[in-house]
Image (cartoon, rainbow, N blue to C red; front, side, top):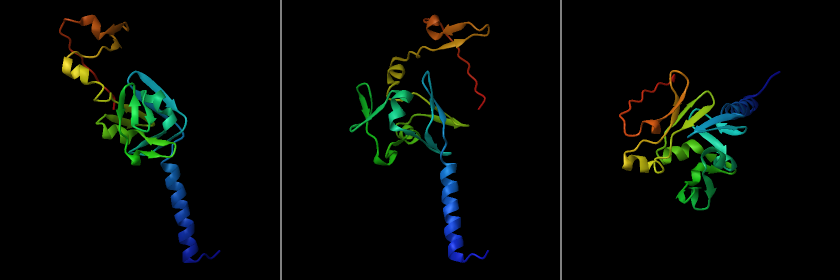
Length: 158
């Protein structure tokens, strides 16, 4: 079957748009934030950005989109218009704007604490409490060692 140049460009352009759209859309993602793990059944993701439904934001990090911005308790952070598209919110773009760390691999997106919220730890020079299993599998809290010197060694496979 013969196809003229115009038909070919229209067909290949539509195929490229369709392929690109499916490449940047993932059906699910797992978001790690603080001590929460949230599985999202509908996201738009690519190698750089994770777009989540604005309605899912409170489940992810306790923020809620309001006219004054992304709000959590009595803190509201203004949100640029380019971070919202209909029901979608660019979670990684928001994180970059507020200097929050982000790591992504294989559909899992890990977000660090919002710097403005952790300010109390920096100013007080008291580390936040956390719990980890020791070599024997017993859960140990950092607060168990208050008043003692502690060396914390961490490792990650990525």
